Length: 242
Ligand code: F6R
Image 1: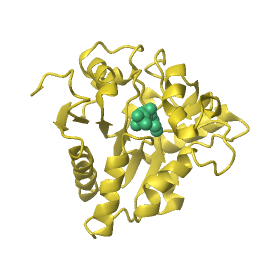
Image 2: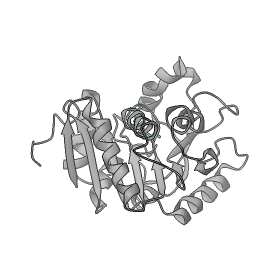
Image 3: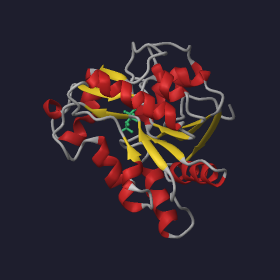
């Protein structure tokens, strides 16, 4: 595991360097997180594409997760979020961006379909964020570490954290479809992007604590190729130079 840390402005550029390096080395299948953490990365990728320094031509992408039950086209559905945050600003074909369908009538069948699609595609580089309770994807504390894509009930902490996107707690869906820890670990390389003091305890537990369902992100310790990019506030609990 490699830890790169720096000021708040450096996280996006450091993560973009990894994406650019992967593309140059032939990566064509990306795994994408949504939410605040990857936004500096996505802004930097958009800048590089606009500057002609980078191209996503021929690439496809797979989202980690999706809310269940939002009306089609809802602004906070992750399919919409990733379009606004990345796809609209780069040369990634929107038809090549995939996510679980949170409005499917049979959610278990949809979870199975999506798991097969992600595994079949083979993710070269997976971008991850971490929740303050140590979730990755929406694998909340207590999630079996060998779980695959499935329906999950969000922790109250996560619903409160994400209420900022919905305007009120009541509007945040209670369930999601998420890739499981086992799905995420299949990606060739994992890039965890973490910013802010609120994430420090979760990041410290994930990287230096035991591998446990109490902190699902601790499963990253089992992957041979993880790069963690954290700003100084998020990395405050980690020993420099580790
Ligand atoms: C989102 C996802 C989540 C987020 C996490 C952190 O696709 O999988 O694990 O990465 O909840 O969210 P932010 O970045 O908004 O703090």
